[in-house]
Figure (cartoon, rainbow, N blue to C red):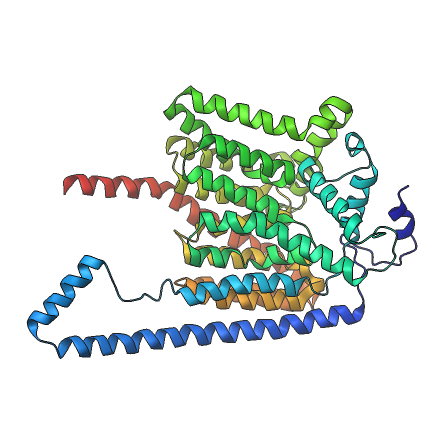
Length: 516
């Protein structure tokens, strides 16, 4: 038994999936801080938006008055100079001050969220296990590390640093200020080195600022310390390589993502289909290079177990494939909860989900295009979530929806808010933090995107009202599966139709250019 395990038996902690050493006063401070921050950000964002809009209107009026007062020759000279220098009046669609403000808010929100969230015992146990156990024996049949190898290396690195920065961290029953500052700084640095560059390199500045403020991701990483930012950042880097049609880079980044969080394997089929389609068009060399790079990535990461403990390889594959979560997830899937016991059938739901995923991948194989791929990834996750997947997949749906901001900004925001609403149960103990972040995100989305239509607003407000009612009356719990089903089906049908029409619209635009 490790030193931390012995100390944690007498710690008097709270039971649950996430155990924390936090005081009641710290929880109250977190709630008040988040409420004040949410109100301040929401108010400031609206003030900045309307102030900038007023400035642009006034400037346009003065420019028109000034030009009308000029002579005809001078007006023509001004227009010619503007066309040559390509100087256009500033647009409200991409205001630089608002983008910088949102980027600052993304960093500030992360630090404020983690200010009083404590040090999770699950993270301490992983760090203690990786530090005090030889690497070949991290995995066992009934015990050991519960995450893939790359996440284990990350925990080992944190444990090594903490042993020098905050000694005796595993033997203390109470957290010190140094312990909390260490875990907050470690999370923020990990996010800054992985998630921030990946999002900024993939999306436009205004959309990247919005993608860095995803409420559920912030709560998962800076309150529960799940470090989902690493797997999501590596997934975004995979998308970045797919956008540039670089198969070798896709293979490397996706291998790293799988070895950090096994849940990303849920959208492996469209990624592999897209890569194979590109290889068929470019020749055999890129495909062989991608297979070689993926094999080297897995081989280097798995060296301690391939050379020192082959029995642990099966346990690692078990972690990567999410076997337990997948088989249990069928009975937690959305459609299963709506079916009566007489008609519930696990095989039927799994085959239905697989059929939808294969139909999505078939279209990717016919049209290997980046726009088709990102729609296919979200459609694949929605199909698994409907019929055969654990509700925790909502986090992947939420994060991958950020890739749709450049093409479907309004619907992408709606999908993010819907996924956040459906993850309310996971954050019910942090209700004020959840509410504050949703307010901040709605205000941020109001600045940088055209916005949602009235149907999306009704669906979002109904979902939030349903979450509030669930706090006071358990009867409203029964309405949640139906609400989730309607949102999932509507999102899948819209995105699947968009995926089928994306290549058709591009072909029509290309034919129009040829005709001209």
